[in-house]
Length: 203
Ligand code: MD3
Ligand code: FE
Image (tube, rainbow, N blue to C red):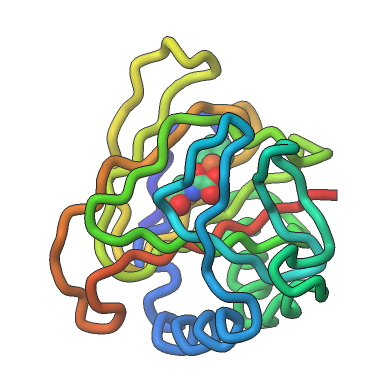
């Protein structure tokens, strides 16, 4: 059963469960072409969460700032193609949450190891904030924080489990959000990690 998290934001518990094993293999194949790496923030910090991308555009961060680009800076080649399995699942999830015809052009892959966190931030590097963001969680559970439209709004907590899908759109698209440090345990399919796929319309 779908849960309304906030205005325009939906949790679809277990929406990706049936596809999880195929998703894991698909992501592994992407990561052999575009390995996970620790990006640097414009402020000079190294991000705990390791990242890669697939699709026409990939999100990167370095001393010059945050942006989407067509080429993987590690290889100089285009990011791996967006696998139809991932694009299709994101489109179905968005439709279920009321966002018809979601057409992602960017898939960010986030890998959390025990202890890794993602500090509170907004996603605002995309061109069109009327397009939702779809996030697919695999592996170890994480405590997700979602705040309001200003950093000062005290965030609420939500556990994201293996196979859960979140859709953020409408008035919630620019909410502050983050992830608490990952607890150490073992997931039967993913081992000691959490993978998050975040699908966006960047351009
Ligand atoms: C709420 N990733 O990649 S996904 C990110 O679990 C990011 O890896 C987290 O935040 C993760 O930018 C959270 C859920 C999510 C993604 C985008 C959002 C929630 C959001 C954009 C607006 C509001
Ligand atoms: Fe985010």
